[in-house]
Amino acid sequence: MLVFYNELNLAFYRSKMDKVIIVLGHKNDNQGHLSPLSIARCELALELFKSQQNSRLICTGGFGANFNQTAIAHADINQQYLINNGIKAAHFLPNALSRFTIEDATLTYPILKQLNVPQVDIISSGFHISRVQLIFDRVMPSIIKNYLSAPSPISSQALHRLEKHEVFAKKRDLATLTKKANEC
Image (cartoon, rainbow, N blue to C red; front, side, top):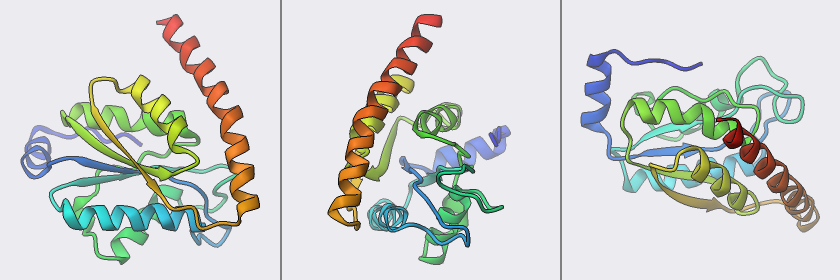
């Protein structure tokens, strides 16, 4: 859900914000417990926020058969984790209820653009960051981006499967982005 700010809210956020930290979602189970990769991303966001307390945060992730089948958006579960660990709710911008990485970028960009955000820190996992960079650089070329890799606390076999998937997914997403650019 995209929230458009009135001029009073825009002035408040612009005056109080140095940059935005975007925490990309991963998975949660059917009880709403975050995956180890999601927790690692949130922990990196917590660490980063400690040194950048004038930042705002956006969490990504909505609903999907492969990552969240609960009644609560994955981004909301991530946000609650961050709040439970010390970040005040006032530091959050609207969550991006995305289903996949391209939507992480296309749903956060209007929020960033409306607030004239010049710089963002984007957090994901190391195996994912190359594709994230490809997508975010194409979707929001005018914004300065810093890509941060959270640790991947999973087995080497699970990590290998994810790395293998990323090779396929990066090619697929590049084709999708190229097609969209050619349609414009």
